[in-house]
Length: 338
Image (cartoon, rainbow, N blue to C red; front, side):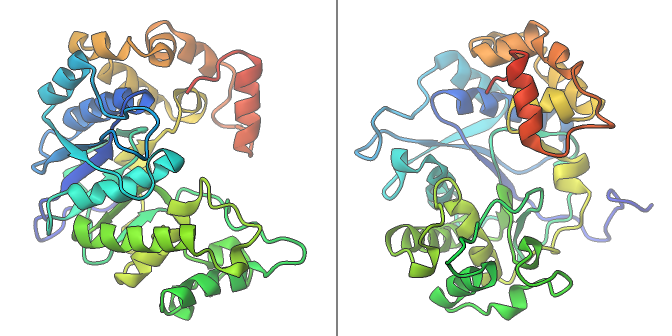
């Protein structure tokens, strides 16, 4: 058998799947994620962990999950709630949750982290992860850095970061790409990443991110760290552990096995028919529906048919090249919802 689901000679290792859930949109996405995982990967033998930040001085509002029916739905889906404290980022940089959450996970157990706005679309237990060589999502564009007219170029910016943490810069480069083209440099979307141990990975991730946040090198003056900090530090962490851009065979994550949809509006606008059908089938059971209908965007897009109406605005074979054009069209038609 060939293709992305060809069977390997040795069974894949057991690993844990981790997402962050918290009050607001993410808690509903967590239920949808968990339901899709159970539906599409019934043979998955690892733990599904929903890491939940707790109230503290770095939060203006309590981010923990208090919704009893929602917690019951997660329990029904076999999710383990793992509370964690935020000591560095909290409300000032919520994307830091994915970093600090790692420190509360089972030490020494391989993990795959997903953003909560993801659907599992295939058997995740068949993905050939090499946890000794971590990697992350390559479904990204050149969002960072944006060199300024009088500042250092892209090459110098990235080189500075590797030097700051005593990492070998040259071995991270894709020499098939021209200098100062963003794809030449190790860069990921942090929508998923994986590694051998969440604690050692998380400690290094936190050290790198915190250092860049609090001791920003002069070469980064004029560059935005918010919201890009996690995606700036992540390639450095992955490279430091001997990982890279090609350690996971393509075609699985961000392919047949997962879909990082980001917003329901974008999912309906651009994802294939089978993803839309999977979304709606996953959300259909009464125990799931009762919870997800509490969240207005899911109620309108999934259950009241607005998602299908938004989908009718687009030709999936001829989508606008720029995502912003898709967003603008959805907004104009009144279908942009988080």
